[in-house]
Image 1 (tube, rainbow over the protein chains, first blue to last red):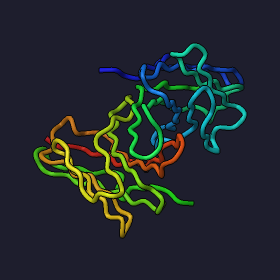
Image 2 (image 1 turned 90 degrees about the vertical axis):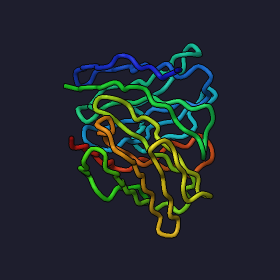
Image 3 (image 1 turned 180 degrees about the vertical axis):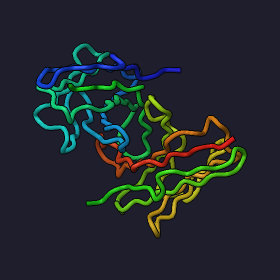
Image 4 (image 1 turned 135 degrees about the vertical axis):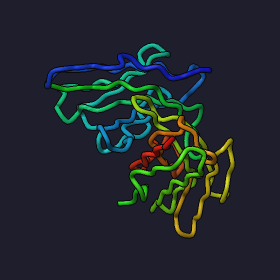
Length: 115
Length: 113
């Protein structure tokens, strides 16, 4: 069964450093998403991406964050100058279409720890 | 602001019993709802969805009920099994564009042997 894959599974970084989280969405999907889940809290939407550009972003997704689809298969989330409060699970998701009646398929997540 | 939320943070049921997990939403524009299951250390896994033009949908051992009048969503799991132990999230999408899902806070379902 096709699945969304994320690497690495766990990333430890020092405060102020840049990190890149990687995702390979399901191959025939067109819409890609990043979500964040701080430990013990709900999953929060960060950004959606379609046709090589950002479609929607939340208040969390500020200038510190950027996304890219560099080669037609990978979908990356870059966090510049990480802060302690960026520590969370980051989930990538993809869907074949957008909007209502659309199931998003989630990856296993990358646990980011900022020290 | 409008939000999707859950009534109970933890629910403990005996194996074999039925369980009901509830969710309240406040965005009247929501027209699509999903229940996700999240096991420890894993990403959310789709369980079942329902459109706003329906009030009930059944899957294998799961049923979702939607009451638009009171903006309430529930997930019923029949004949619970140990593998059902997880955190369950409701999520909603108000449609249009590449909207992200809005998740509720989650209910931790514990299946007692």
